[in-house]
Picture 1 (spheres, rainbow, N blue to C red):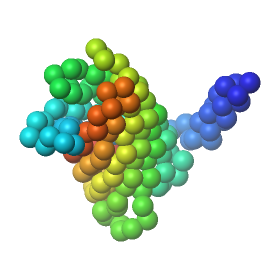
Picture 2 (cartoon, one colour):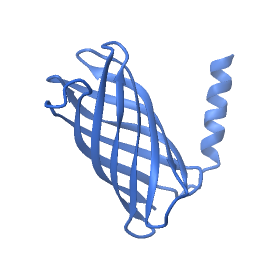
Picture 3 (cartoon, rainbow, N blue to C red):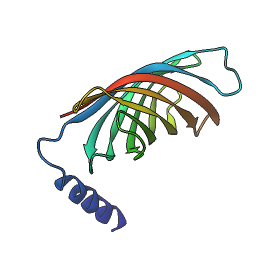
Picture 4 (tube, one colour):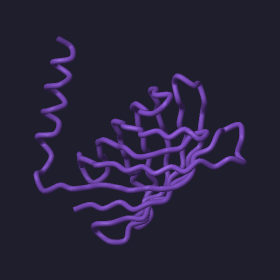
Length: 152
């Protein structure tokens, strides 16, 4: 019963989003162990966002990461919040929780933040950093990404 109620609330949430709302981001960068900052693993990530308002988005994310020579495809549920400080450069907070598909598949979570540098009304340059934790391996990673956000 709890799963059915959750599914209904999730569906209701997305019915209030305007039909013409399209927001996505694409980021690329590096991810490395917290304890060993000399090794860099490539990391690409993107999100499809559903705007709640101009400052808050919920969505789904996915990408590709190589961690210790093992390729993963992370899939996640995500939350993005712009902080109301500034006009052209806005600080943001982001969180992801999901599953890594790969040789050593496992749950993961990410928490981070960065800067949303507005190019105009419909696009931004992103500079992001954060912490990623793999549940099964018990390892923490730091990520640094740059990317672009498009809002239509």
